[in-house]
Each structure stands twice: as C-alpha cells, then as structure tokens.
Image (tube, rainbow, N blue to C red; front, side, top):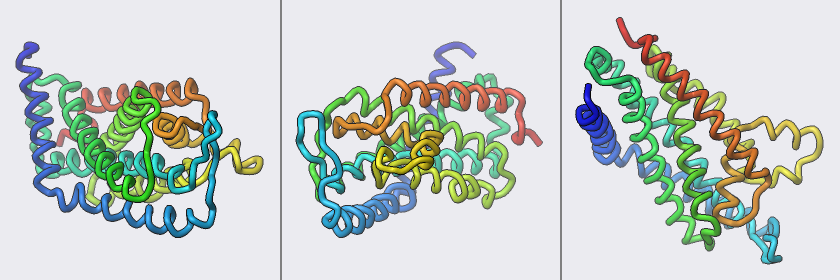
Amino acid sequence: MNAEGTLIALGTIVRREMMRILRIWSQTLLPPAITMTLYFVIFGSLIGSRIGVMTHRPDGTSISYIEYIAPGLIMMSVIQNAYGNITSSFFGAKFQRFVEEMLVSPMPSWTILAGYVSGAVLRGFMVGIIVLLLSLFFTKIHLYHPFITLSTFLLASVIFALLGFINAIFARKFDDIAIIPTFILTPLTYLGGVFYNVAQLPTPWREISHLNPILYMVSAFRYGLLGVSDINLVWAYAVMLGFVVVFGTICLNLLHRGVGLRS
C-alpha cells in the first residue's frame, strides 16, 4: 500500500472512532463528567476544606487541597477513558469479526494500531477538557508549563491505549476486558498520588509508591499545571517513554502474528 492509501486507511479508522465516541456520548463523555464532579464535591470541597493548604510552590504561594488533586483527577479520567475506549472498540471489532478484514487487507499493522490508539487519545482529550472545565467551578487552574502538560497527557493516554489494545487482543469475552481495570488499573490509580503527596508517606510505603508508573504521570501532569511535583521530571519522562516503546512493540508484534485475532 502506498503512502496515500495508508493515510486514507488511517483517517478512516480515526474517523470511525470519532463518530463512535460522539454517537454514544452518553456512555463515553457524560459518565466521567458526573463522576469527576462528585470527586470535586466530596474530596475537594467537603474534605479539602478541612485539610486546607496542601503544599507550597517555589515562589511561596500556597496550594489548597482541591487545587492539588485537580490535576490528578484530570489525569485519572484521561487514563481510564483512553484505556476503556480502545478495549471496548477493538474487542467489538473482534466480536463482529470485521477486524479480520483489516488484517487481510494491504493496510500495514501500524496503521491499524495508530488508528485505534488515536481514537483512544481523542476520547481521553475530550474527557480531560470536560473535567478541566468542571474543575474551574471549584478551583483555579494555572497552566505553568504547557509543553509538559500536553506531552504528559499524550504519553499517558498512549500508554494506556496500548495497554488496552493488548487487553482487547487477548480478551475472549466482554467480561475479560473488565479484569485489568478492576484489579490493576483502579488500585494503581488511587495509589498513584492523585489524592495525596507521596513525599508525606512513611517508609517503606514511599519507596513502594515509586514502583507505580501512574505516580510519574500524575506528578508530571501536576507539575505542568501547578508548578510542583513529587517526582523528578527526567525519571517521569524516562518511565513514560519506556512504556510507550515496550507496549508499542508488543502490540505491533501481536498484530503481525494475528494472536487472538485470526480464527
């Protein structure tokens, strides 16, 4: 397939994913908006008012608890929705068996992967924007480092889109795509520094928390929005880029071999 045909194929997959997200917006966009609003009300307004100041910026200005958790809640919604979008969409393609038509076409494997990952990133971006706008009703958000904010969002959403793609490939029934979100993704998210400062944890929990990859994503995203971070940014980007390379290689290898896709 030539370059023009590859771009057309990629655009077709991305457009299909976009139409799917918008067509069932009550399932893809509305639930995270409601859930995050409840988080802001309960953890931010009610509990946060009792906690008060969470930390301080290098210039000495204070950061309230609700302001501190806002970036974490945004990142949590991005991760969950990027993951959920690609698992449901690609497993649906397997279930309806039209994924086999894509595999036998001259379309390269990376085009299929890039198309579905792009759809997951788009949903993560839309949900992230919605949650960001909702957060403005509860606190003030200052974009201190735009590049770090956008790059962290992109890397985090790509990582969990790739992980969701792997889950969808090996899933044999709809129940299988809920295993990783329930038993792995949700615990790692809640223990990833969304609601607390990791530096305040006692030993050995502080050291154990550094094994959680979501901690690096949340901390880098928080630095982009608030100017403070629990983790060294060099390590954060190293971890995120490493996961992109590893998961991307695994996904392309599975697609090329047709594991769990060809009957």
